[in-house]
Structures are given as structure tokens and as C-alpha cells.
Amino acid sequence: MHKKRIVALRRLKESHLQRLREAFEVAYFEEPELQPEAVAAALRQAHGLIGGKLQVTSAMLDEAPALEAVATISVGYDNLPVAELSRRGILLTNTPDVLTETTADTGFMLIMASARRLVELANMVREGRWTQHVGEPHFGHDVHGKTLGLVGLGRIGRAIARRALGFNMRVLYSNASPKPDLEAQWGLERRSFEQLLAESDFVCLTVPLTEQTDHLLGYEQCQAMKRSAFLINVSRGRVVDEAGLIRALDERLIAGAGLDVFEQEPVAADSPLLRMDNVVTLPHIGSATHETRAAMASCAVENICQALRGERPRDLVNPEARPGGFVQPQQEQPVDAK
Ligand code: 8YV
Image (cartoon, rainbow, N blue to C red; front, side, top):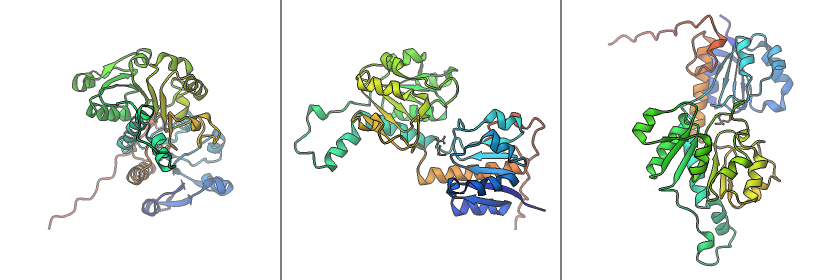
């Protein structure tokens, strides 16, 4: 039987490629931007596409008539045309769960780093400017005992909440649906978005980017925050109206920000955000650890294998793409007991 064909994009480990090659004919492009024509040619034959930072357009799909499944190595899929994929019967899978704790670590790290001025003061030491004992001009702010406002209470929001409770913080959340179980068990308190902005010492964005969350927070929302508050963003850059945030930071409407994501990535070298001492900027490393990136790739490999076997993949984003349903997973043959 002929193997199905897949296109794999961007730095997969040898073990993942090997697993893919056992099941499929694999066209692998480590740096697809350097070989756009070869990628396009491979896609014309492909049944599956797997990789990180995937850019998929209608025009591309027109040229990939055999495509059955796309497995993104990310939890977010705002860069992918979900409705278009569904319309064409193409399954989309993502990699939730495996990156939750690591991304929550990044969020909490940004809370700590912003409040304690970690980057600014570490740079002072590195650059030989630590010439006398630090005094009030270098003091930061406590994190423990403060109020954290989580905008969105999905998996990552909940994992940040758990960390915050360990720091004896009060945790507010705004979310489309109430979470009475977490209110009862953990003491989380639901607020409207506006009320959360007004009460929080740290406003942390964990919502996915959708039409509703595009530019959710800008200048006006910063005006509603405490002057002593910090904004933390580990979701997507476009959830923040960056020009509005920059203006608010310039006017000291808020105390600072911790940003892992930007409207444009990589962020422009001349962005005013990079010159602000009270802004901690990271290069989108929410999930970027050896362990978690390997787990994400394994998860995507498993998803594409399931999808191309006709089974329902574990992390299916668009079940509507396959109204006819899925085949039952193949049972492992029991090993005879000796
Ligand atoms: C990805 C992310 O690794 O999963 C996501 O949605 O933002 C990151 O963890 C990054 O987008 C590369 O694919």
C-alpha cells in the first residue's frame, strides 16, 4: 500500500521525523522560507501538513487538492483559516495541554520580573553601574498579597491562578462563562473586564486572539487600570493595541508591562517598548523549553497520524470538517502472557 504524503515544516527532531517517516512519505523543510517553490510542489501532492508558525492561505489550499489534515505545533491557531479548512473538509489539530504549565511559568515569570524590575536591575549589575547599595529609586513592588486579574480563564489562565494562589494573591478573572467550581475550590472571583481592570495590581492576558479579543486592551483600558498596575501579555500581541499601550506607558498611566508577544514579531528594533525601563520584553518564549517543544511536536505527530488514519485526532479543532465521522482507532494486539 502506498504511504500517504506529508509536508513537515521547521525544525523537527530526528525522532519525530523518524516516527513520521515510518507512516508517511515525508517532505521536510527546515527553513521553508528559503525554498517556497519546493514547498509548493510538495504541497500539491500532500495529504498532511505539520509544523510550527504555519501560514495557510486559500490560494495555497487551491494548490493542495489532496490535503486532509493540518497539524499545527502550537496551541494558538489564529494564523490559520479554520472556516476555510472546514469548508474543504480539512482537519485542523493543535497542541493544547502539553504547553500549559510552561506558558504559565512564563506568565508568572513576567509578573515577578516586572514587579521586581529584574531586567533593568540585572542590566545595571552587568554593565558595572552597581556602584552603591540600592535604595528607594531601585525598589520594586511585592507580588505576594497583591491582586491578579486574569483576562480569560482557560487552561493557561487556570495554571497561572494556581501559581498566584501559592503566592497568597487574590485572583480575579473575567471570562465569558463563570467558573463556579474554581470560585468554590480556589476562591477565584469573577469580574466584568472593566471591573477587573480597576481592581487588579497585575492584569494578565491569557485569551486567544479572536475577532472579539483583537485590540481588547489599549489606551482607554490602561486609563481604567491603577497607576501602580502592571500589564502582562502571554497570549497574542494583537490582543493589545500596542500604540495605545505605548502612549499609556509614556504618560505613566500604568506602572509597567511584561510582554512575551507583540503585534509584529519579531518586534521592530526601534519599538519604543524596547527603550522603556519599566517594560520587560521577551521574544515569544511562552512554550519555549526543550521539554515542552518536544512534547508539542510529539503531540502534533500523533495528531497527524490519527487524522490520516481516518481516526478522530485527539486535539481536533474543527470536528465540523468531517460531518461523516471517523473510523474507530485500531486496537493494539494484546501481547500473549508468557
Ligand atoms: C508556539 C504559541 O510555539 O502555542 C502557541 O500558540 O504561541 C507558541 O507556543 C509558537 O507560536 C510557535 O509555533
